[in-house]
Length: 126
Image (cartoon, rainbow, N blue to C red):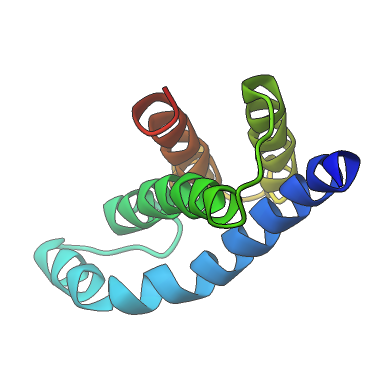
């Protein structure tokens, strides 16, 4: 059972990240609308603070729900495996980086969940 937990932990983290990628923007839509209206000239491919907030919340919730999943089924993994799981997940997220778009836009889209993972790992898993 132990080796299966180590195999399934990154898979569950990836699936949680996908599900939260759908749920968090829907919940944050009113805030996104307010931020877009407050900007004088909103551009599609510029730095988007709403996407930065959504990514940080999504990354934090991914860590939280993964730890809840592991504790609910009374499963335990080493701390280094959790760090390695989120390093691999960060690598997968950065694989979606589009070099044709401006850096600020891609940072707010792809790097913000990694910031959320770091915040979640430092605050929750001590």
